[in-house]
Length: 205
Image 1 (cartoon, rainbow, N blue to C red):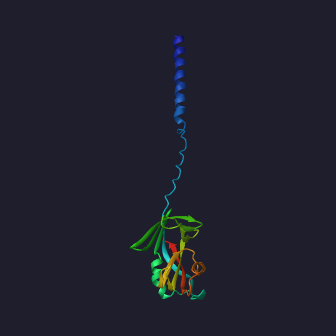
Image 2: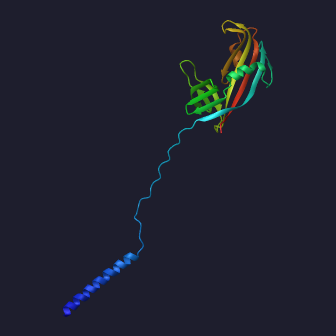
Image 3: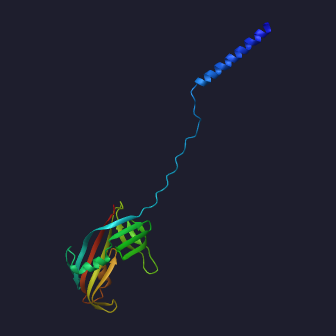
């Protein structure tokens, strides 16, 4: 009898301890599982976007008349005789996209070039027909660019140059009157006019 009572007492103690342990576990706060923090995905570089520039202004850099190496400054107002030439030379819009430059003169005249930028100069790459040359200069902030154009109108005749009456030579780039005079100083009685202009463009909003 006493032995049975001891067994019952021992069993009650075991049950009590187990109940207390379970009760304590139920009241303890639930801890979230340990999970490694997610690493943010590396940012993907944005694709290069084409930059479009619209014509904004035309400035006269130099306008001269010349005869026998004597020159006269004609001022900053462009003579009407140059208007057809400038209309032909002046692009209305340019689009620069990495190594490609698209030059729009009008709806029916659009040209595409392979280019690279060197010291903010947009340089058209050489082809089998043409050497490499500087086409335009872009600003540091890429918000604007300029194209320089030099033109000559020469009176007289020269068989080698096939110049008859009035001719016009156009060339993009940094060309000045001295360069031209030195190149053609063998011509006698050369006379005509020289014009260098800057076409300015601003980035399209």
